[in-house]
Length: 221
Length: 185
Image (cartoon, rainbow over all chains, first blue to last red; front, top):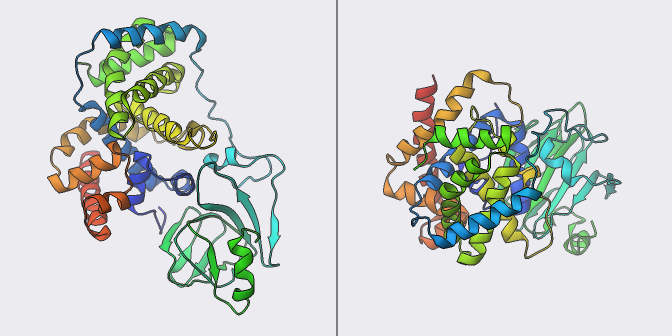
């Protein structure tokens, strides 16, 4: 059981399918790592099923019958697929990546050093306005102090970190409006890897911030 | 009408022997419901019809992945319809990664056999419990699922403070969770 689960209202948005791509990916990774949140989502899916079942519908009419015939005709070309092997869906290079992340890790993607402080892999989620990144922080290292103009979602995938709000380990989820500044520090041990989804550009608040912020806002760093 | 057991039998009939008659019965039951669900999300009826057909074709394709011990037929069809709705909404942008790949229908392997029988029953219980929610709680849950609105958008629409919507969601989920856990223990 994780100490920092995603809040219920976010799990609801996820199960209902209303989250934009970035936050949906963050919740998907959290759910993959957190059996308790997985159970909540299973239940919410059952709520969706129950609501679908009680949806009032008109009688199945002639038009519907025509639609059914069209679909039946198409089925000849649609094989019934064998169930996916429960086998390892782990990524060959990034073994820490939970299954829902794997399709996003395209061949050739690799860590890129940013400001000499941490490593980043920027993910491209089509049609989403969030900035979605994997960050890697060596043990004991901190991210530059920053705040956000919008919401920030974080899921820890390896190691852990500590900031003003607590200690976060694998599977833990953090979401916050960005008004508060924070300065996460990676815990001792293996490097901390996390998915970070940011609604709006980050604003650096340290002494170099005013020089670096224009670069951040242009997406260069 | 189609009982939960009958619906599960029909999906299994597709999986084991590509039973087209079974598919037709599922289609008759679920296609209009999925269409209504998509229309409520704001799509026009034509587009909704198309999405519903695609969802039902997915039911055929993925029938062998259905596991009645993990979810009811209605729950499973809901997750497929929801993913199709997401794909439909994103198609206007750029081709997205197939939602099936990352918006998991359920945990692939949880190995938790004890819970499996109960998981199938969850749906029936949830259905009964939905009737036990207050109107305030139910409206928030319905808007999230059927009107394609995040909790933030629901707060705006109902002209309620965000905190009120969050607490209604938590109360509703708390009630569901409590009652379901009582059953399971």
